[in-house]
Length: 412
Image (cartoon, rainbow, N blue to C red; front, side, top):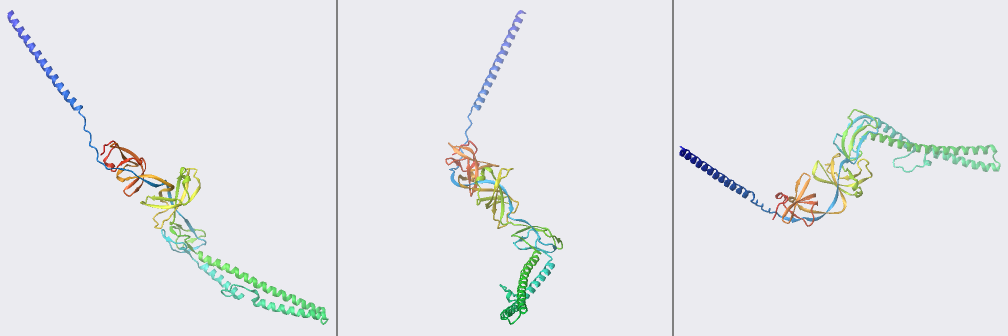
């Protein structure tokens, strides 16, 4: 039995040894497997990423050019003249000749009042004038007037000359003693009376002639009253508003229409204080308006305010703007450029060399085969090129096609 137990113990020990051997082999295999996988992962992570191929682009040097410097300002368009036309007389509105939007010339009728009373008064005045002219013997075209040629003056002068002759004769006879003192005194009295009648006749004729001049002035005033029954445009312009209609009673001084002058217009600008010294009368102004974004308009400075605004610290400048096509309207908002004296510098690059994002623009400057992004300030577009005012210099090499590049890209 002891032998049996010893045999079982021996078998048990053999099984335990086999189990230990199997476990060791398993551990060794797992370790080897893990080691292989670690080596494989190390090989993948350590592998270098291939570099991208250089981008083929055309490069060029920016073309240096001269340009006129400007000050960017904003403003509004206003009418050169803007008038509420009023009536000089009162009366019933007889006829209207314009509507809102009618283009009128200086002196063109706007409204006509009933002129009946004024015409009758003028006719009466003209009749009185003709009466005086006939009374004085004045015909149309007479330039001079001599009171001595009037019949009553000639008659009084004849009586005066006769009285003077009789008095001279009486004086001689009185000295000779032929006539007495009473007859001599009577002769002297008749001479003085004839002289006074002669002077009175001349005075009355001159008074009539003065009345003739007064009547001429009165007739002109009456003719003006007839003319004033027609209210006319004070200048070339367009009717913005008509305030009355036929049949209405129009009081003296009442408005009949509003007329604005559209050619030329005034461009009212506010210039910053720092640029106030650079503005002068006659200076050229270029501007755009929202209604015509693709068109550029121009004018010249006509008026400069003598002082800056206390609120905005800006200088008010007005430019005269031709408007022959009547495209511009009072009230348009304008973005303008005041041309400054002297010449500045800019660089021309192709439009394709510039990338934009809202208000930011940039180009790619190539340095040692690498494209570097450079923010720039742009000027005017000239055909297929654009002015670069700031951001690049004369020695910079620029990529002609910015759409192919990004910052740091290699180029060839």
